[in-house]
Image (tube, rainbow, N blue to C red; front, side):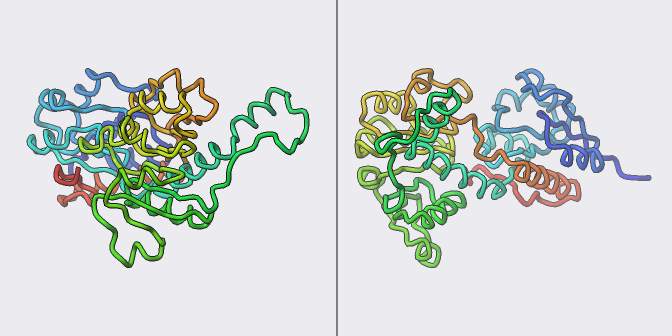
Length: 328
């Protein structure tokens, strides 16, 4: 007699290869629509699942976990960040949590550079002009932006993505600086020709471009606050492809409107998809709808990691990408 297959509930639509493999390996319940589950739907899903596969849009807190019953054993998050899940409460209930680290490193780093160039070279303004049919021809003084070569890039968070951004920025001739909880090992730091700043304030005040590449945790909430934004050089640019909560968005908007900050490229926002409407009005701001990891290759690789975590768990072993409260 074949062993009973795990019941797996997936909260959002995933790429076809991922969904097909989930159906082949497990008793998988897939979504027909890509509509986000409500809070009650998530609780119901947890009650009938051995394994829940949520995404970063699914907020799972302690009160929801308390209603989940005893069946749920693993939350295999489709995404590297797990700030949408109360990992501590899950562990207290004996529910393991896993994620998909490392998959979106290159995709996110590519988007960081794309935003950097879009802001500094005024690409959106040129695109709007062309699409509107308003271009009157080349002019020596039209569409003047700035070079990034030779500029100082300050990276906040020098993990996998921060290092990938640094390698790309090196190729553009940028000078690499960084602030991190811990200084990188010399064998990692030296090839990047990176300068470490123990003081975030001192780094922010001296950079031409700031790139946010750290996770959202209680200690990084509004790490870039009104006071630190005022330390920035007037023409400096800030790029965020990490988590919106790291920047005080209202303070950033005020600084941009007042001309105290040169520009911003944002792929993430403090209140999810509820974007501050004043940001949309600013010509020196480039806004993207959380596209940093949006490549088909990346999404399939994320799904493969989810499947590996579930399969390893089903075989009686610890998921390779298990997340523990102490890692947050």
